[in-house]
Amino acid sequence: MMTQTVNNNLFVEKIEKIVEPLCLAEDIELVHSQCVGGNGTMVIRIFIDKPGGITIDDCVNMSRQIGDLIDVYMEDMGPYRLEVSSPGPERPLKKKGDFLKFTGNKVRVETFELIDGRKKFTGILKSFSNDVAGLSINGKIIEIPHGQIKKARLA
Image (tube, rainbow, N blue to C red; front, side, top):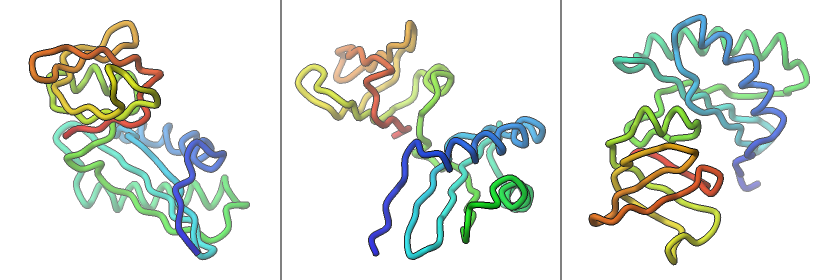
């Protein structure tokens, strides 16, 4: 059976709803989560971060607590495997605050529709205001509305 990523489904929403308060209490940022199904066992991936970076101990601690929360609040989940990790150097940019936080960094952006004749861009994130990301590519600023961004990550 082929494994596929399940985006924006009820599992992801429910998991983020129970994990976010824990992350806030631990002064850890919930960067991204996803559920990937396959062979009867759901894989839940939770990506966390904090100033100075995430340690293995942080991942172990959060994994234990998140696993307990899933077991209590998501009894209908069925078998699952939980993976808690740092988002890594190619961190995804999801929330509007991510774009503000990483202004000045090199990013890769993929859009839903053509902008300036293409859908994939790599450049320096120069600005983010009025829900529009300004990318500098070869000295030219390309403006990409946040609602048009399919994927964005640090490059």
